[in-house]
Each structure stands twice: as structure tokens, then as C-alpha cells.
Length: 263
Ligand code: DGL
Image (cartoon, rainbow, N blue to C red; front, side, top):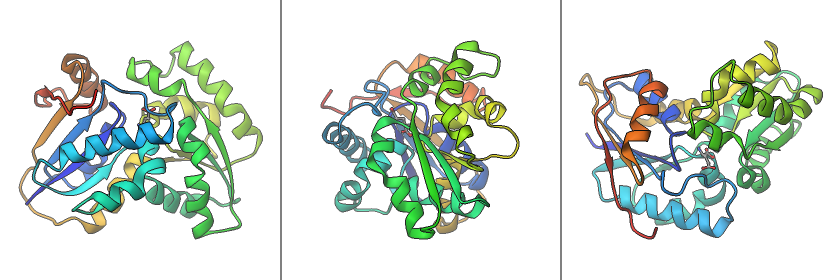
């Protein structure tokens, strides 16, 4: 059985890997984190699309049967382009996250936090409107979240991340959303911090978990134990240290540094 190719700009897509491992333990996974060029979210469409195409083409060199874009930014900006050039099925995070949000909301007020590129694309608004046009979406870009997470600043009790989160989330709390899409795959690492601020009445939608749910519905099943390969475009040691924490797994295999060209 072929592997699933998963990519993100950095570590964030590991939230999808962790969900895929839990739902599909037999699944082989090849993960590419473009750590040399993270963060993507403040860049323009053309550059994000170019990076996304380079990542996808690199992964097409492996035996993969599905490409999972475990990056909200690439999913909102370059899904159509990737689908057009891909010889295999492509899954982004937007549609799965919108499906879960529409299922969860009771008051039809849904918050969205994501990168600047994702929020200004309006992709989540369009995805939700296709499912339920009565739902109002409140989007807030959170440009400091990805760099903080990439630097390991995601834990409850860290005053820097808690202060930044309070500033970003205040308008969403004031808007009375009952559901909040974590539209960037780095953000589930901030679940404790975000949930503490938003309170019990707000359901958080993890876009990495959502795409894993969609993958589960189409993937083949088997009894074997899946293998994983982690590839990064910059320092493998730093990625490995954080990946162990994020995946709650000290046994993760070696991380390999690769040159995907164009940097
Ligand atoms: N995990 C990426 C996302 O889901 C982070 C984007 C970035 O690199 O800024 O949007």
C-alpha cells in the first residue's frame, strides 16, 4: 500500500500527522515540513503557490497515493493549482474544517483564526456558505501565532502566548461565536491557551483533525503498523526536538534534511 504524502510550511502539519496516526495506524506517512521558508502566511499568493508546487512536486517523487495539504495557508490559496497538476487525489483542510464547524455550531456564529493569507482569501467563508448560507463567519488573522509555535511558545502559562492570544481572540469572544475554526494547522498546539480564553461554551475545530477524518473515509484499511518518514528543508535537529513533544512520542524516527530546490 502506498504512503500518504503530507506537507506544511513547518511543524504545524504534525497536528494532522498525529490525527492520521490515531485514526489510521496502518498508514505509511511521508511528511515534508518546508522549515527553510516558514512562515508562509504573510506572503503573497504567487509566492505561496510557488512554494506549494515545489513541495508537492518533491513528494510526487515518492510512492504516495494521496497528497494531504496539512497547511491552511496553502489550502486556501493554492488548492486548485495543486489539484490541477496532481496525478493523485489532493485533500486540503478547508472543506473538512468547514464541514465540522457547520456540524458544531448552534447559534450560527462561527469564528475563524488563521494566517493573514488564509483570512484574506475568504476560502473558509465560501466553504461555510456552500454548506449553510445563514452562518455568519468572523475571521481574525493571527500573524504572530506561527512564529511563536515554531519557537516552542505554545504552552499554557506562557505569558507571551497568552497575551498575544487574548488580543487576537477578544473580538471573537465579543462577537459571541460558539464555534471557532483553528484554520491554521499550527494552532491546535495552542488549544489549551485558546480554550482557556474562549471558555467552555466554544467548540474548537482542529483543521488537522478534520482532514484526517476525511482521509479516514477514503483510505484503505490494513492491520500492519504504519511507518513514517519526516523530511525538512532546514535544521533537522530543531524539528526533531519539537516533533517529539508535538507527537507525544520520543521514538519518532530520524528526520532527514532534503533539498527541494528553488530556495
Ligand atoms: N500551518 C500553516 C497553516 O496552516 C502555517 C502557515 C505559515 O507558515 O504561516 O496555515
